[in-house]
Image (tube, rainbow, N blue to C red):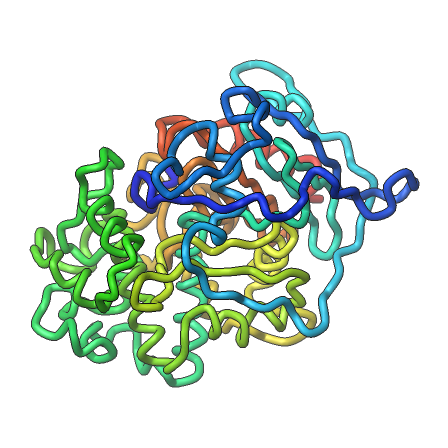
Length: 423
């Protein structure tokens, strides 16, 4: 259920970094460190013999290009740099704990998980300490991994900051208050809150068949046209439900939130991310965000960052927006973003979808404990448990963008991690 970007908004990147030569810091010492492998499940299918090539924009959905595409996307598509922090913050490390999980009545180890799933990177951290960090398919801790729709949650957190700064007066304001170009359109008449909840009621299809609305939107935004993004989204203008009444996944709603942010803050979304979050959490590496032909961040996807920097962002969310005593995102905003109001039961877990609920551009796990996830197609995810401060970052190259049951095994691993390490 990773649902974003069109079948393929053509992702890719290039193998500019010499990943194969990367070595873990302290290799050979007793101290724990990242572990690298030059192979992975079905490595031959993914292009191992050719060094996991990247190809061109025309080949970004080919299986033998996916590993390269999902780790060097910003070298094929125009992207805005997000600078590393002035003062990087460092995780501590502990030796890897044994981790076992049960799936389909089998008792398996985390090593089995990597042998069974096309994972490019897997990192588990508890608060300020990394417990597990492994890479496959010749990927390393220097590669920037494509977020896909994990970027949606980043956008939602930036909206919360903009509200706290008074740049956005209220999330109950209509979009047209901040994006005048959409005045008189159905999206322009929709509240920011409804967009945050994916509940605009405006018709938009996202089934990844190459002919759906997300494919049309992706071709327009990634095609390099110097056309204002507001003009592109305005063509989707048929209301099918009253706003705020029915959940329906539509990446275009995050795209519009990006337009609201750009207008309200008077700065590029990537720069706002850097200034309000990225620098403050001590990101160790440059990141990037794909932009359209007009220079606007493609908000519903396509942040590119290292695994540890994704883990830093996950840690920030686990602490409800606080970083080393400094509140970067208002705590109440994160609580609102990761819970469902009593009046909004249609967003609840097992109601919005057969399993997940939905908050502010964030997936909510069922159960009494507040737990949530950032998800992207082909099994990109960051799972967060605020109570234990456990975070799991998972990047992968599943062969299909979205497929039923694809999250069952990673979730089985996650719940085992919570049980074994969450005390």
